[in-house]
Amino acid sequence: MTFFKTLTQTLTRPIARKRWVTRPVLLVLALVLALPAQAERIREIANFAGVRDNQLVGYGLVVGLDGTGDQTMQAPFTGQSLTNMLSQLGITVPPGTNMQLRNVAAVMVTADLPPFSRPGQRLDVNVSSIGNARSLRGGTLLMTPLKGADGDTYAIAQGNLLVGGAGAEAGGASVQVNQLAGGRIAGGAMVEREVPLDLGSNGGLLELELKESDFGTVQRVVNAINNEFGRPVAAAMNGRVIALDGPMNANSRVNFMAQVENIQVTPTEASARVVFNARTGSVVMNSAVKLHRAAVAHGNLSIVIDPRFMVSQPAPFGEGETVVVPDTEIEIQEQDAYLRVVEGADLVDVVNALNALGATPSDLMAILEALKASGSLRADLEVI
Image 1 (cartoon, rainbow, N blue to C red):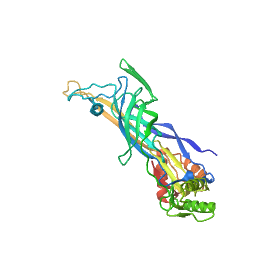
Image 2 (image 1 turned 90 degrees about the horizontal axis):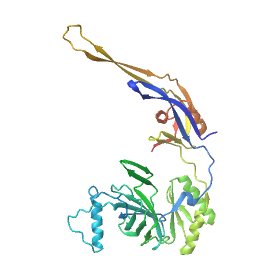
Image 3 (image 1 turned 180 degrees about the vertical axis):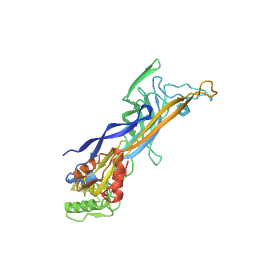
Image 4 (image 1 turned 90 degrees about the vertical axis):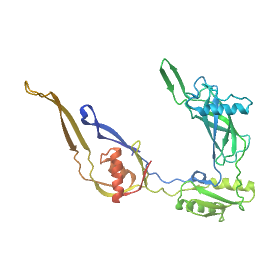
């Protein structure tokens, strides 16, 4: 039994003289093998409401570049930013001055603020160029405020960039390895303000939120929590949220939350789903997919366009002109296709039935869509 099936199918492609010929193409049907459901800790399938990261973003300048910074004529905001920064440091740039900066680049700085972060803690930041700088390698990020969605500053970033790429140019030739327009500063931001979070402020009430909405899983989580504590401390509010009657004391509340997170629960099986990736041609199914009996005919179309040119020459001493006359032959060939019965009660049977059709990835998507429309395929179709 294998996770993947590989088969060959012929596709057409144009070559010289616009003749369409066939060539073998590999088709990979990615599948998830049916495995028995296993118990998981609640912390893997649910989170406590409010206990989450917060995204931060800021605009800053990177200096110290070796002539690889922004070209200020094409990125005027870099010069404006430097002028504003210099004015705050007591340096006045005369109006109309054209600063030909090559060692400065405008960047966006992003970071994630973890829950319960306190002032003085360090955060990792990502720095990305927004101008036309060729490289940020060797640059230093100047003090950059990082703001949240509410517009308040929660951290300050500054430090030397670590760029994983490398590049060189000479004589009109260039070579580059990996990305040079972005870098990272480990511990490059310092938290200046914490995000207020008061767990259990409503009489000790806590909310547990499932990562995937499912009424069956909610019921199992509620039963598991109540059995663990021997009393009704959990109650389902909907298909995702569970209300917990937690302790009023902060220390007891932390112990209560830790005990809840480590309770083992077996989630219900996910609904049948087939996922198409239209960009890569991947088709993925989960173990709940079923295929009822159906008959499918599938065949490819082959088009041959064969242009030929003939010379039309007038009779001797005639007044006509010699011209080239095109003579194009167009032939359409349809591959023989016969009805095939497809059926599958489990995932392996479904795989074997679909592989027997000998379809390419794009054709397989169309076939599965038609099977869904006919009622034979018991699964939801999703295109990513």
